[in-house]
Amino acid sequence: PNAAAWGFSILGVPFRERSSAAAQRGFRALMKRLHPDKAEQSPEFSRAVDLVREARDAVERSLLRQQPPGQPRALRFSTLCEAVGRRRLKLRWEAPFERSDAKVARYTVAIVDPAYGRPLTVAQLEPDYNQELGRFLPIEELTSFVLAEEELKKMPRFWQQQRATVQVAAGNDAGQSSWAVLEVSLGRLGR
Image (cartoon, rainbow, N blue to C red; front, side, top):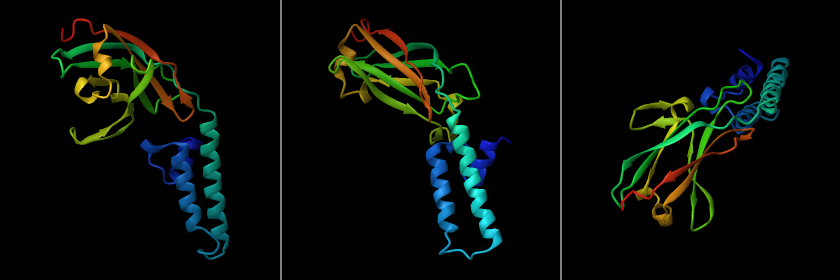
């Protein structure tokens, strides 16, 4: 394994939770247990403290080399329901081209609400356990999202326009990609 993987494992950070915040939590938890007031002073104790610090440094060095991921590709949509009050659009995209220093940790979905005149985030998609499927969903499977009128009741003007703008970006601890932008025709939906 590489130095970052070693560092995360020493700090007790699970693979799917690897981030600078998780590494910091792991470091603090271990240092609390190894605090001189709580642990006996011995050569093993000193080596353990040095090992934890070295692990934290390895993780920080690897995260400093990390770059924001590229833009999601091939953003498209399909209509799932056209009935007024229950309109639904399914957005789909492909992951950015893979780079070892720019892994995707999450996707952000935003829509331009005409009432505000700017994009508003409607979802942050991150790897998580899916109750419905009964299993963990990795980032590789998070390449779609359903825009549902019933869930966007606070943005009614979105569905009243002829054309709408939807956006998807990829992100990680180093930052966010540029937006993949799609103009969606709403003109025929529910009219």
